[in-house]
Length: 194
Image 1 (cartoon, one colour):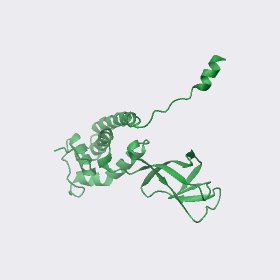
Image 2: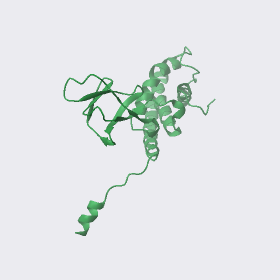
Image 3: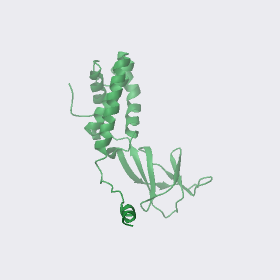
Image 4: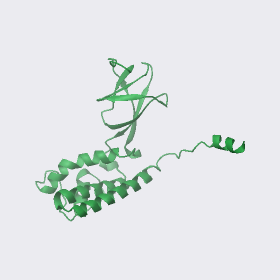
Protein backbone atom coordinates (compact mmCIF):
# COMPACT_ATOMS: atom_id res chain seq x y z
CA UNK A 1 0.00 0.00 0.00
CA UNK A 2 1.38 3.38 -0.99
CA UNK A 3 2.13 5.88 1.74
CA UNK A 4 2.26 9.65 1.73
CA UNK A 5 5.64 9.60 3.43
CA UNK A 6 8.85 9.49 1.54
CA UNK A 7 11.74 7.40 2.70
CA UNK A 8 14.32 5.48 0.76
CA UNK A 9 12.27 2.31 1.36
CA UNK A 10 8.99 3.96 0.23
CA UNK A 11 10.58 5.17 -3.01
CA UNK A 12 12.13 1.76 -3.74
CA UNK A 13 8.87 -0.05 -2.89
CA UNK A 14 6.84 2.13 -5.27
CA UNK A 15 9.49 1.68 -7.99
CA UNK A 16 9.30 -2.09 -7.60
CA UNK A 17 5.51 -1.97 -7.92
CA UNK A 18 5.95 -0.09 -11.22
CA UNK A 19 7.77 -3.08 -12.73
CA UNK A 20 5.34 -5.61 -11.25
CA UNK A 21 7.66 -6.84 -8.48
CA UNK A 22 6.92 -7.24 -4.79
CA UNK A 23 7.59 -4.09 -2.73
CA UNK A 24 10.23 -4.22 -0.01
CA UNK A 25 9.78 -3.25 3.63
CA UNK A 26 13.51 -2.83 4.39
CA UNK A 27 16.87 -3.09 2.71
CA UNK A 28 17.50 -6.28 4.66
CA UNK A 29 14.44 -8.30 3.55
CA UNK A 30 16.77 -10.99 2.22
CA UNK A 31 15.33 -11.10 -1.30
CA UNK A 32 16.69 -10.00 -4.68
CA UNK A 33 14.63 -6.78 -4.62
CA UNK A 34 16.12 -5.62 -1.31
CA UNK A 35 19.64 -6.65 -2.39
CA UNK A 36 19.43 -4.56 -5.58
CA UNK A 37 17.77 -1.64 -3.78
CA UNK A 38 20.28 -1.53 -0.93
CA UNK A 39 23.24 -1.58 -3.30
CA UNK A 40 22.02 0.94 -5.88
CA UNK A 41 19.57 3.33 -4.25
CA UNK A 42 22.01 5.78 -2.64
CA UNK A 43 24.04 6.16 -5.83
CA UNK A 44 20.85 6.88 -7.80
CA UNK A 45 19.65 9.35 -5.14
CA UNK A 46 22.92 11.30 -5.07
CA UNK A 47 23.23 11.29 -8.86
CA UNK A 48 19.66 12.60 -9.15
CA UNK A 49 20.38 15.32 -6.58
CA UNK A 50 23.45 16.48 -8.48
CA UNK A 51 22.04 16.42 -12.02
CA UNK A 52 20.85 20.02 -11.60
CA UNK A 53 20.96 22.72 -8.95
CA UNK A 54 17.75 21.79 -7.12
CA UNK A 55 16.42 24.59 -4.90
CA UNK A 56 15.24 22.12 -2.22
CA UNK A 57 18.75 20.62 -1.95
CA UNK A 58 20.83 23.82 -2.13
CA UNK A 59 22.43 25.42 0.87
CA UNK A 60 25.00 28.04 1.84
CA UNK A 61 27.68 27.85 4.50
CA UNK A 62 30.51 30.04 5.73
CA UNK A 63 33.68 28.04 5.20
CA UNK A 64 36.28 27.48 7.92
CA UNK A 65 39.78 28.59 6.93
CA UNK A 66 42.56 26.02 7.34
CA UNK A 67 45.70 27.07 9.20
CA UNK A 68 47.98 25.43 6.65
CA UNK A 69 48.35 27.33 3.39
CA UNK A 70 48.21 25.55 0.02
CA UNK A 71 51.48 24.50 -1.59
CA UNK A 72 51.03 26.72 -4.64
CA UNK A 73 48.76 28.85 -6.85
CA UNK A 74 46.25 29.73 -4.09
CA UNK A 75 46.48 31.84 -0.93
CA UNK A 76 44.12 29.90 1.32
CA UNK A 77 42.34 26.61 1.85
CA UNK A 78 38.95 26.02 3.45
CA UNK A 79 37.19 22.91 4.70
CA UNK A 80 34.07 22.02 2.70
CA UNK A 81 30.78 21.45 4.57
CA UNK A 82 30.36 17.83 5.72
CA UNK A 83 26.98 17.44 3.96
CA UNK A 84 28.22 18.75 0.58
CA UNK A 85 27.85 16.51 -2.46
CA UNK A 86 28.51 19.18 -5.13
CA UNK A 87 30.00 22.66 -4.89
CA UNK A 88 28.43 25.37 -7.09
CA UNK A 89 30.03 28.67 -6.12
CA UNK A 90 32.37 30.35 -3.67
CA UNK A 91 31.78 34.01 -2.84
CA UNK A 92 33.37 36.78 -0.80
CA UNK A 93 31.12 39.77 -0.01
CA UNK A 94 28.49 38.34 -2.39
CA UNK A 95 30.93 38.32 -5.34
CA UNK A 96 31.91 35.01 -6.96
CA UNK A 97 35.62 34.23 -6.76
CA UNK A 98 37.80 31.68 -8.54
CA UNK A 99 38.46 28.44 -6.68
CA UNK A 100 39.59 24.85 -7.06
CA UNK A 101 38.62 21.79 -5.05
CA UNK A 102 41.20 19.33 -3.78
CA UNK A 103 39.73 16.42 -1.84
CA UNK A 104 37.56 17.89 0.91
CA UNK A 105 39.10 21.35 0.65
CA UNK A 106 38.42 24.49 -1.37
CA UNK A 107 41.47 26.50 -2.45
CA UNK A 108 41.04 30.17 -3.35
CA UNK A 109 42.60 33.62 -3.04
CA UNK A 110 40.98 35.16 0.02
CA UNK A 111 42.30 37.26 2.88
CA UNK A 112 42.11 35.88 6.40
CA UNK A 113 39.50 38.53 7.30
CA UNK A 114 37.22 37.57 4.39
CA UNK A 115 34.02 35.65 5.01
CA UNK A 116 34.10 32.91 2.38
CA UNK A 117 30.69 31.43 1.58
CA UNK A 118 29.97 28.26 -0.40
CA UNK A 119 26.78 27.54 -2.37
CA UNK A 120 26.36 23.81 -2.67
CA UNK A 121 24.08 20.82 -3.11
CA UNK A 122 23.59 18.68 -0.03
CA UNK A 123 22.09 15.22 0.50
CA UNK A 124 18.50 16.29 1.23
CA UNK A 125 16.38 13.81 3.17
CA UNK A 126 13.63 12.10 1.19
CA UNK A 127 10.93 13.58 3.44
CA UNK A 128 11.93 17.01 2.07
CA UNK A 129 11.88 16.00 -1.60
CA UNK A 130 9.06 17.63 -3.58
CA UNK A 131 6.62 15.28 -5.35
CA UNK A 132 7.92 16.11 -8.83
CA UNK A 133 11.42 14.96 -7.81
CA UNK A 134 10.18 11.84 -6.02
CA UNK A 135 8.36 10.66 -9.16
CA UNK A 136 11.46 11.25 -11.30
CA UNK A 137 13.61 9.18 -8.90
CA UNK A 138 10.95 6.45 -8.78
CA UNK A 139 11.05 6.17 -12.59
CA UNK A 140 14.86 6.08 -12.48
CA UNK A 141 14.80 3.31 -9.88
CA UNK A 142 12.13 1.45 -11.91
CA UNK A 143 14.50 1.51 -14.88
CA UNK A 144 17.26 0.03 -12.73
CA UNK A 145 14.93 -2.60 -11.25
CA UNK A 146 13.57 -3.53 -14.69
CA UNK A 147 17.11 -4.29 -15.87
CA UNK A 148 18.41 -5.96 -12.70
CA UNK A 149 15.33 -7.85 -11.47
CA UNK A 150 12.87 -8.24 -14.34
CA UNK A 151 15.71 -8.50 -16.88
CA UNK A 152 13.50 -6.68 -19.36
CA UNK A 153 15.49 -4.27 -21.54
CA UNK A 154 12.45 -2.72 -23.22
CA UNK A 155 10.78 -2.03 -19.85
CA UNK A 156 14.06 -0.59 -18.55
CA UNK A 157 14.31 1.70 -21.60
CA UNK A 158 10.69 2.78 -21.22
CA UNK A 159 11.22 3.79 -17.57
CA UNK A 160 14.51 5.47 -18.42
CA UNK A 161 12.64 7.63 -20.97
CA UNK A 162 9.92 8.36 -18.40
CA UNK A 163 12.64 9.29 -15.88
CA UNK A 164 14.31 11.69 -18.32
CA UNK A 165 10.98 13.38 -19.09
CA UNK A 166 10.05 13.56 -15.40
CA UNK A 167 13.47 15.07 -14.54
CA UNK A 168 13.05 17.71 -17.27
CA UNK A 169 9.61 18.64 -15.91
CA UNK A 170 11.00 18.64 -12.36
CA UNK A 171 13.79 21.04 -13.36
CA UNK A 172 11.20 23.41 -14.84
CA UNK A 173 9.05 23.32 -11.72
CA UNK A 174 12.00 23.65 -9.36
CA UNK A 175 13.38 26.66 -11.24
CA UNK A 176 10.23 28.59 -10.33
CA UNK A 177 11.23 28.61 -6.66
CA UNK A 178 13.37 31.72 -6.88
CA UNK A 179 13.01 35.30 -8.03
CA UNK A 180 12.94 35.55 -11.81
CA UNK A 181 16.11 37.06 -13.16
CA UNK A 182 15.67 39.95 -15.56
CA UNK A 183 17.80 40.27 -18.63
CA UNK A 184 19.48 43.69 -18.66
CA UNK A 185 18.25 45.34 -21.84
CA UNK A 186 19.53 48.91 -21.38
CA UNK A 187 22.48 48.38 -23.73
CA UNK A 188 20.19 47.03 -26.46
CA UNK A 189 17.72 49.90 -26.07
CA UNK A 190 20.55 52.46 -26.23
CA UNK A 191 21.91 50.89 -29.43
CA UNK A 192 18.48 50.73 -30.95
CA UNK A 193 17.78 54.40 -30.32
CA UNK A 194 21.09 55.58 -31.75
